[in-house]
Length: 72
Length: 168
Image 1 (cartoon, each protein chain N blue to C red):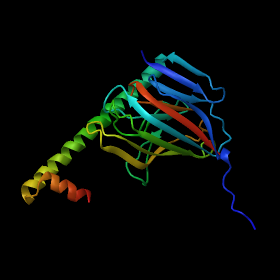
Image 2 (cartoon, rainbow over the protein chains, first blue to last red):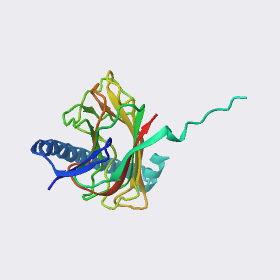
Image 3 (cartoon, each protein chain N blue to C red):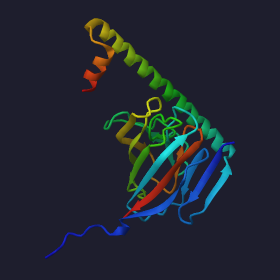
Image 4 (cartoon, each protein chain N blue to C red):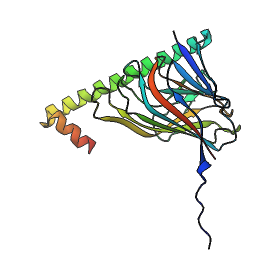
């Protein structure tokens, strides 16, 4: 069950309750956005690895050497 | 002889602190008489790998946030339903520290932004760090900020502590 914690800054009261239907719907949007950005991050990592592998083939340097040089 | 005055001890006032748990943690009824807000999150862990923290203001779940990919730019339009704060966290990322500054949060005439920096353990190499500084997140609203909601992609917080300060 999805739980929402509400901490009232003025009173200090902390309430724990199940999320409402509206909050759960909004959460689905957040989850979808997270999945999309994780997919994009994965694609970026794969692209970087592919570029490094191609560079290693053409230059004779190892992928590790290229990584170190590019981070310098 | 005049001495330079240092800010008094009350310069930063702890408004609220607690433990992260559940799916979302909202800090509500934030008073409007401070200049800025600062939120520190220590040792946050989540129950799923590859999940970081997001924030929303005033329970606004609409696509009214901007998550720029550069430190400056033009023509940034609202492109998100939440503000991503840090990147992927592992379930054992516990050494993480997140620092969020929200300047002039109570004004009612400008859009708002937050500025964040963080460090946390890399989820595959726990002796290495994931980090960033100067991440800018935008909220396209002129409302005063009276609540902050912390989420982690719809997953649950496993542990961690938050500290909300008002800066005078």
